[in-house]
Length: 224
Image (cartoon, rainbow, N blue to C red; front, side, top):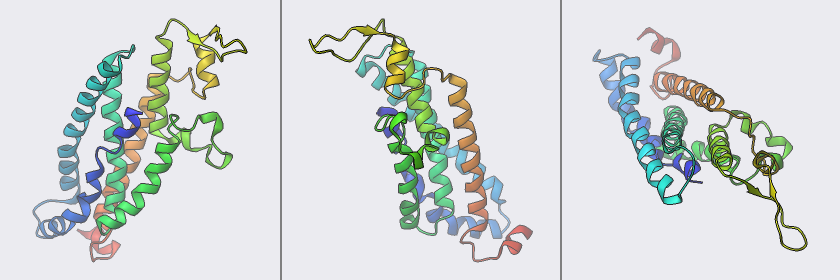
């Protein structure tokens, strides 16, 4: 649950481009810097605090919950989840004229990813129309991997209680599958999903910044 909620930590990015677009356009047209320079600098300025906030929150939460997995794996993924959510918010912000527009666009996207992260609705119970969401959902990959690590670190898992109220121990991988998780998922599966999600949405953010709501045509912007 903590990892899922961490995606909301960078919600302020929705105000980023609507607030700074006027200044950026003025400086860019006066020849102070190109779009890519401003975009890379602004992105790099945001990234460290997001990742460090996730790591710090992960360390605190790890010991508060009394978890069994590696603390740094949990904390690192917490930071990467924030960074990936920031990429989505940045893309939405760049194609929006105002904060209100970016808020209206971001909430449906994040709500779907949040709801189908594997924590609230098991992957096995997702409606047919939404079955594709876990395959592209960075929250599902992060949550699934961390749940698998935590459960597999246990000595045994309780089964479903029988008529006498006694729950015989069962194989933990079987318990994970029954709960809708994928015990075969590994760390690189999670990392590749996070990497391509970041790449896609940060590329969208760049082109949105360069071509959306500039008061110029696409051809004019390409010449600058």
